[in-house]
Amino acid sequence: MTNATIDTVTINKADIASGGMKSYKQDDDSIILITRDDDEFQAFDGKCPHAGADLGTGLRCGNRVVCPWHHATFDSRDGTLLEPVAIAGLTQYEVTDNGDSLTVNTSAKIDKKIANDKLIDTHTLIVGGGAAGFMTAHQLRNTGYGGKITLISADDKAPYNRPLLSKAFLAGNMPEEKLLLGGADWASKHDINLRLNQTVSEVSPNERTIIIKDKNGCSDRQTADFLVVATGAEPKIPPFKGAELDGVYTLRSMDDAKLIKAASHDQRVVIIGTGFIGMEVASALAQAGTTASITVIGQEHRVMGNIVSETVSNALIKLHEENGIQFVFDARVNEITEVKRVVNPSENEEENQTFSQVGGVTLASGEQVDADIVILGTGVAPRIELFEEVNAPDGVQVDEHLQLRDGVYALGDIAKASGQMGRMRIEHWRVALQHGLVTAAAILNDDSVSSLAARIPFFWTMQYGKSLRYSGHAATPDNNILFGSPDTLDYIEYYFDDGEDTRASAASTLGRDKELVAFSELLRRGHAPTRAQLQAGFNIIDQAQALSP
Image: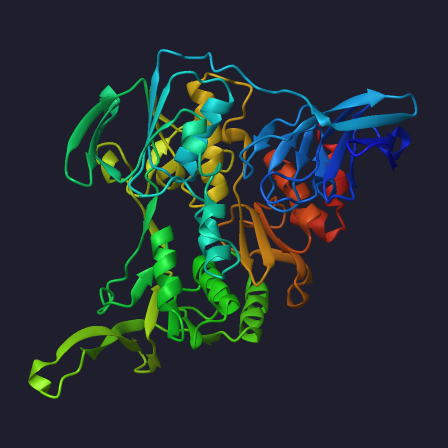
């Protein structure tokens, strides 16, 4: 490979097998990805548009190019986005065939603009500015929707990447402006009427009508051709005494993250909860290095106990302890205690003004854990009150296209959706983005886009720069097979619902990304490995590629 000019790269055809792909890193840190099918070659920007991973280190399964980091997936023939967490497809370059070689001209990009000429006389109302609502609006515009789009958000900010609050923002690794989805001018660029600081007080699904209230209490009634409700979830506040005190925080929004960031300086921080949010907050604050101490309280004896096995949990505990985190396990919180602080002390004690704030956490055992602030990582509940007449107790039941009834969709954290792995409600960012992708296709009646019946859940958690990734869904992590060493952060673990001959329903990994991609592709196609196959040395990567059309 040689550089002919600053914009062109010459590549030997024989370097790439038919049905394969290869990436080429350039001196300017750019990457070119080449895919080959017989004598057809395509060239793309080889960095995943989500986080910049080298797509050539991922896996190609049939016409699917899967990012090794977060499983964004692209069509190998034209770069079309097939799966989030990326929100756009790949930039494609012109290729010149020279016989035994190819010349890629990175200054000659193939124009993929789509005319917004579909459903021009319609109106789509989207309630909720999170991942699902954003992706619905974004994908509608990117795939030809020409009607009016109104997105209503109770937030005072344009849609942003909430998972990065605990993964990067709290750690000081990413500024606020970098979290905006689609950039600062996303709404105007895509001709989307973004209405911030507004809440929806009523939804009438049969009429596809909503009542909107602004912060001044003024009401506005709107009716649309398509109604999309993605109101998300809100933190669960445990019923113990003191949860309402100043100095007790939850993390759901940018404002929450800013408050925690400011309040935690030189303070004794206690985190209640050992799920992935609690562990990410502990990691982020430890990396920021601004607290006096960090203690995590858990009801069980392990972390992320509903996701990974005890062996993996122990490795994560070790990682956190090496970074200064203290744990109190098998503990039930009785009370968050308060202390009185004096405001502007006076010589006349009777004139002193006091206020109450966190002083510590009292456990059922009687133990007292000192604290200046407490962060609750105790789960979330779906905001389903707008669907009181139709919702199930644990989510709004919708079909594989997220449709509740004709022209009405419920998605994201509130949706108990029918999919390949059954009907379930899943509170993951990538799943919410999938919902937006599927809903946009349903509105446009585009059956070339897969429904949830052909998609599987995926999420990742980032702790101390290490990314634990999880694909699928398992009822318990305790029916498992483990390969590798969690202590050295190099493992893959498969989870089974029951029995010796059942197929794995989920897997997690640190450091074995290609294997997890291969598992995900096999799971998606209904060919996940059995326990016996894995124990017999099943080559999961070869099998995923062999079974892909």
